Image (cartoon, rainbow, N blue to C red; front, side, top):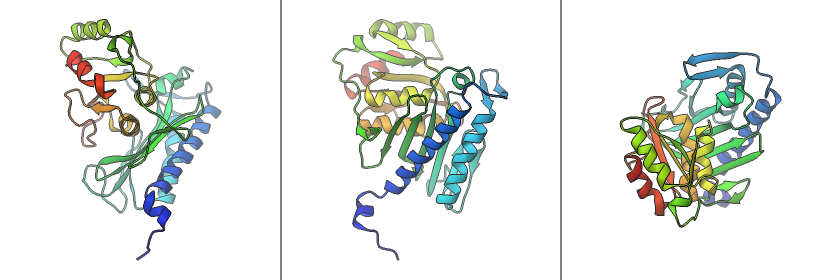
Length: 274
């Protein structure tokens, strides 16, 4: 049996974190090389698209994972689940990488500079590592279990505003009485925004660019695994729309809702949107 070094024992995910940061940046360079030069856009649904760059970015990331961590499983937005030697996602065991090669594809395809690369690692179906790379700003948000949330290597924390009325939040509501609930939120905060990349908007809670993130459904595991974990490690309270656990890899695509906010204001926001 190989005995880990002292450094490895102190930072058991340091190799994985460094790998994820590097490969996300490489994928980001690919996105920018082809930015505003997309040759093909396919329609996955009435409101969702995929480009050839999504596939190229995903291939780059998945090939690197297979080469570096061949026994790990993979769950990727464009190509689905890839079981390796160890148990796949949803089994409650093993390690699984969750990859969104371009979060905010509609923005990307239309030349709107708000999109990102998202990579997370699950162990036992729970996120233990997350990386969000914004190639337009050359920014990387990251966190690993037991460590701080960081932006380009500097620790970050959520908003510390005293008043909910000063909040700028990423807001997307749906379901019953949506108009009434939306009006209640708008009256309680300063202003809502909808940016077109859930992962990037959610991770902005980690450093206070958004004071909170609210999206009622429509999200998938690859949208939230990395960003939600980073926001949580930064100190935000992250839940589903009932106040329960925010991450469940077994949930179907586009079936997840998330509310992330500083602990002092999370309950008030939850009460407004429920």
